[in-house]
Image (cartoon, rainbow, N blue to C red):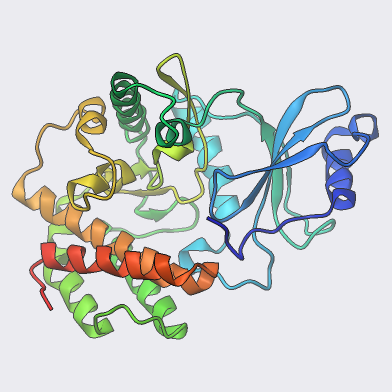
Length: 328
């Protein structure tokens, strides 16, 4: 899936970025040294071959003149903070960061080079049928285990990794949700529901969020496509840009509990160490599914996504609202 947020660059600019990061001796010859990778739907990614033959990955944030959702502002800096935190506080494998440029001098966007992990993308391998059913199950269970280790990191506050954050999870999560609805209203996105209906549904169930009293590190976006696999094991996690301090039940690997178009969460839950959710935990999880469904609807104009994607997202929002007791 393509997106207007992808900040593609010319080979001339890419060479200048290589020179700044690795020195003139590593600037490659020819025009075939960079290959765009399809893993992400927000930033643009290139696999770059340096002059000595080594391969690295270049990640570039969206251009400054492209509108993004409120929670997506400064996401590359959030990702760098998340990678630093994960590296310091856990044993979860992530790519090495080689060079970061936040100056806006070569291009008006943040960018960084990182290690190229030479292994299949787990999610793509699942989609293309490269893995057996047993390997898929084992991979999701291992991904759940990775998630468990990440959520053992305790934060100083709820909400974004940087800044003061919030004292309570209800305040942090509600702020995230309200900002999203405001983004939708600004872009005149039709949710298929009134914005008041969606707000009232969140508020009616928001007291369940008070059960979360300790801010834990949550990737939020730990899908199979954000993991690299080798010999049945997850060997690296990528795309940490949406990480927050919050409720571990918000993780994407649990979305299939509510929306069946997403992968069966059973093996992920085994690795995560969760058997069954209590009634109150189910209510929290359904709020996060509602948030995700609204994201998928609201982001369609911000990404320039096709009508088919918008209609599909609206269907998921209808399901999420229904799980919280609202039926059209």
